[in-house]
Amino acid sequence: MRIFLRDLGQFVFLVLVNRNMEKEEIESAIYGAFECFANTEPRIEYPARAPLKRPVLLFLEESGGRRIEFRITGESDKRMLVIRRLSGAAQGCGPVVSVRAAVEARASVSGEVLMRFLYRKELMRYNASAKLRQVVAAFYRLYRGCVRSR
Image (cartoon, rainbow, N blue to C red; front, side, top):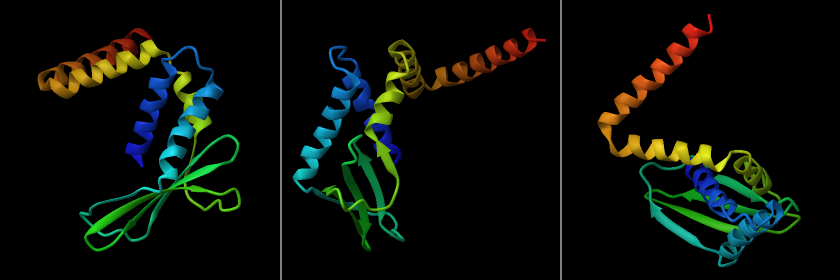
């Protein structure tokens, strides 16, 4: 689920870069893309490391109340992801991710702040020695800020 939320956030960010679209249009476009994919009724199988105790459900919801279900089921040596569009009557129970909330959350963070964060993340990922320097520098700034406030 964490990977799904991260990828959804990146997708929203990429669409937000287009300043010609309003938030409602972005929400509609993102939900529409998932809906088009769900209409193909994909079933994705992949190997499992451990068996699932119960199916994992996640719902993507549009502001109009329409939902797309992501269901992961497990058998002994494999897992299957099924994505399907739900009708208005069949709501299901499980965690719900609102496309509107995802767009609002991403839009509240400035592009400059987000790019600064992503740049630092990439530096730390590919430069092991920089990790230590970054941690020490962050600790020093935090320490210095605490000492100055007294």
